[in-house]
Image (cartoon, rainbow, N blue to C red; front, side):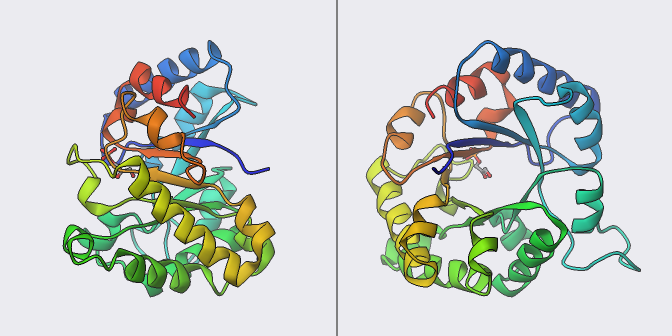
Length: 252
Ligand code: 13P
């Protein structure tokens, strides 16, 4: 059975003290609710180990890095390799976020390498895809997302594919207050699942969690998460406030 997941992407927000306080608050609030959903906090890599300590052994709140290197260990100043993250027992890594694509020049080919590096190291990738506004305006969003998904994921084995979480994040909805309608999200998620089914088979496609991201709030999460192919969300701004984030978790 596929999992519902609500992952916070804190991006480059919060000082260390603030991040630890937020993690503590999320942990406390998460312990007060009953949910089957996996809860993940995606923080700055530097903060992940102290956050893990705050969350404690066996916590139901998991952590994620927001990027990894396309290279292994070696002379790559400033990079954090996938096996280094894995050695610190960080379970998840967000890859291919639109901010990495647009601000840091990550191409589909680079993301493909990172996904592979992550899986080889034993990390679980949260692979992001999604179209910019002009593409949505032109109505060619499926063509673009197809290329993103095919390039990054179609070289994987079936076993590897089942470890990947996909996050559909239309770029025009990220941090803008505009959300895709629940139907727009459902249409794209069903399309992505159909691509996975064609390549890896229906059973694998059925197992994959596909998250929606882009201005998700507690006021719109229930409707979006209620769609049959939406298995939770990747949450930016709203994940920076613990009770708002947990109210979103409750919708999954
Ligand atoms: P917002 O929820 O702030 O729109 O950000 C979405 C996002 O980029 C999550 O990765």
